[in-house]
Length: 134
Image (cartoon, rainbow, N blue to C red; front, side, top):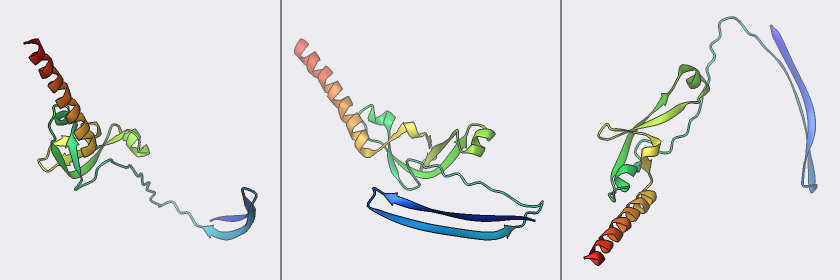
């Protein structure tokens, strides 16, 4: 049986305006046996969640606004050692048609509108140049 005792005290000064002091004393014991399960939880944030609406960057670059309704999000981890540390994992989004999307293939509505408008302006500029040359 191992016993851990902890005693500490200190203070906090915030911009010299006032001081708060604290004292903490704790004591107790921890019994450790050879049959214990240990689990780690890693929190990885994703840009979109189930039920969110995203837009295809491929379609937006062609002047089309294509909605992608996210149905599920799964994590794809590159290797087992990376997965244990939470690194090397990236989200895979599945839409309502069971297509799989990556983060870099999806954009928000505002960004999709900007990309589509830029494409339309570029094409319109080409058309205006052709009309002037006729």
